[in-house]
Image (cartoon, rainbow, N blue to C red; front, top):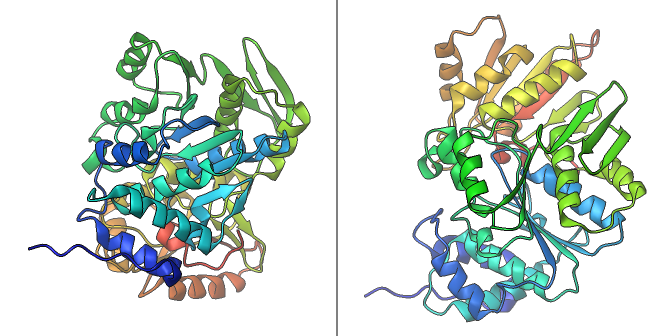
Length: 427
């Protein structure tokens, strides 16, 4: 006889509820929409009053969400944003008008989901997604910006029909769930597209089979390099399409390709956006753990890059913006990621490696990272050190970086959300 896990009292607090959510479902990741849609229907969540932008992609989702949210807010619209995972606190996952919510508000939402689900088992992510939608439902919001957790087609977020769907990029990641090639992965992410509605593709090399399939379904597909374009100069950039053009835009802190994708999504949403709000939003958009600079000494660059696609972008960013500077890289990764490919993509930008153990069953050891680097037989004479924790690796990297002043050394932290989340930084 299976004993049903008893939920905490509402007064037990957020941590008790999060612990309950972690134990509730037998699988950490359980892709499919039937269970979450059934509960969402009971809670009357399937048809939000606000317009919805859903954002999927291998990389770039978080910064695209932040661009959209910031520009919309400065244009005078009320917004709700849902992201995952969080870096340090669960509250980071849900924002209303760019503000995180209290523990008590999250617990109240969890209680509502618990009462509605009955005997339906929900994963941690499914439960949290429903709670976020319930919180949004109780506010007079104009636009919801929802980040897909994994893939797209079978992700809980895809239970809501978007007015505009966005795919930021296609890379090899989560192969156990999405497929082993770019076409399979792209097909899963394109599962958020809806017939007769705009779909924005910020991936310049979308597999042709997926594009053809979307067009056959009547999706209004808008692709970078085909339907919208952007180019950068030293101090500014421009965005244009057949119907609109923005010139001399300020260079943002977050990745430029995602800014271009966000502008295309806003154009497709067809809400009036003053040029002043667009420019101010590009400058103000910040996302903790994405190309985040912490002034020193030593100066640090923090980024959640955890696959070859993101690592290559990060390495190019470092080489472009911090040329000729020694780079002390603090890296911890999960075992189910492409460790060798990620380290190979970073190698050209790194002069000193500080590998850290990541705790938990999925965490890779520092020695595993060091072995993968050695097996790759990469050119260069970068030094390698291994540490039992991210904190120890970070402390050692900062200490050694401080000893190099001409030119000043840069401390780079990346490899996983879990790694970045353990490094002190401001949101």
